[in-house]
Length: 292
Ligand code: GUN
Image 1 (cartoon, rainbow, N blue to C red):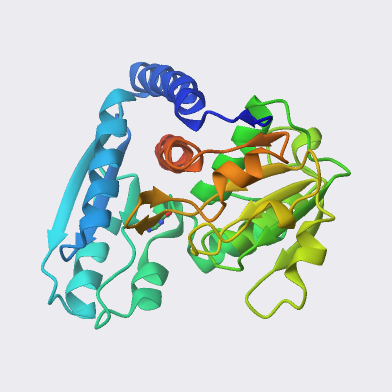
Image 2 (image 1 turned 90 degrees about the vertical axis):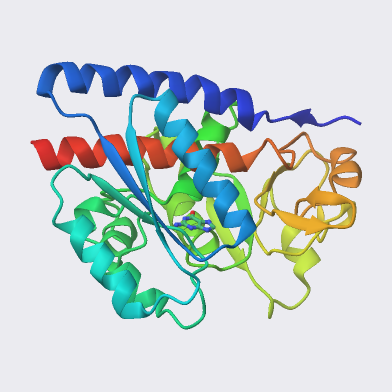
């Protein structure tokens, strides 16, 4: 194995320590403790784990959190009523509605109802629009976590060719926008990429990924990206979290890709911890914006 492992767990720890200090300083100066409200609808086991991890991380970082649970049979109106209550609660700075929502709930209607200043996931059309114009308020957690991972690992993106596989609203699309910007807040060295956005209808996927200096896999298919997709010494970022009979695996065949790549994120312990970390960063930012 030749690739350097990009350790998202230890990078997260470092950044969370910084956020914890900043949250404490903000509290000292303003008397306000940042607070995240997490909304969990139903009993999805993975969502329960994610929300628990987010609550624990808040505690470590001097950020208050409160979990609001609704049953699996909740209606859109009931979720909307809760979101509206949290919108109007001045002690709540960030609102996170854990996805996926049960199928009877209109997810777009719910996410659109979150007050943009409390939208710490950056899913609201106003925040997506601001990002696309290069003047972001909040940056979406997983893609911005990836930019932080690259930055803390000293892997510059300027002038490089990044190939993103997957066009979701949560990861692929905002990742493409962010990498193509002049700066996302961590300096020009960690933006300014030439971006290819591939998806399920892309013809000859390998031809695209094989040209890339950086491959970001966010497709939701276990072990999909293999050594044949990669150029020698490519940097490989694996966003996938797939539960298989062999346990938790990413979208990248880690063992095979590690032989070709220069650096690679593991699953678990790569991108996942960074998503939580940026959520905390956004919650602190939301508290500052609402306290100004
Ligand atoms: N489910 C999977 N990823 C996410 C995320 O980033 N935010 C929310 N709210 N739900 C998710």
